Picture (cartoon, rainbow over the protein chains, first blue to last red):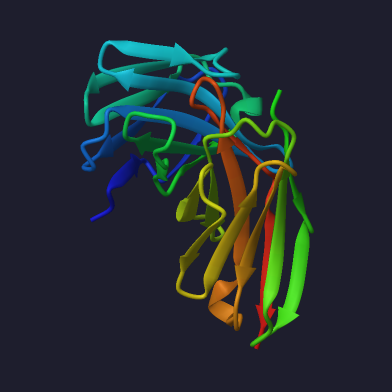
Amino acid sequence: DADVTQTPRNRITKTGKRIMLECSQTKGHDRMYWYRQDPGLGLQLIYYSFDVKDINKGEISDGYSVSRQAQAKFSLSLESAIPNQTALYFCATSEAGYHQPQHFGDGTRLSIL
Amino acid sequence: KQEVTQIPAALSVPEGENLVLNCSFTDSAIYNLQWFRQDPGKGLTSLLLIQSSQREQTSGRLNASLDKSSGRSTLYIAASQPGDSATYLCAVPGSNYKLTFGKGTLLTVNP
């Protein structure tokens, strides 16, 4: 089983719909992250969480919200989806500290029509 | 603002060849540098992480080097195989723990 699991793996939806992407981890890491990847732009950080009570905005948080339900679970929501949110979304985890690597899930491919 | 550049953007080599992928970064005050592999439609697999105090890190046929003063890292792949075909990304952490990624090098190893 994967250490970082994202669901769903693929999702197609319509403009204006509310969507939730889920991430769960079995690594026991305190820190969790949400990134989006767009062709030609690389990965951009949406939100990150150092623990259940500590959630921070990344560089592109507008239009997104998150919930850290437990140490192992971190969900990303699009309140009212728009076509330019079509992208590949990744969840990542790490232990505390600058020296620790980030570990990524397999991603959710989201298409908004 | 940290910027990460990877050269070349794409590379095609015959099987068995040794190759080098390049990564440069503008702010040398980094804690570490991480190399990832991404297969089409898949997530990122961490290959190597070099701490700022290290100069090299090896895993199997992969060897990564880091020169903080010049803002450069290289990923050396020995005896390349078709299964090595993927996009290779380098990334460095910033002040808010955000990883800044390069745009990647698309490697194709031809049988």
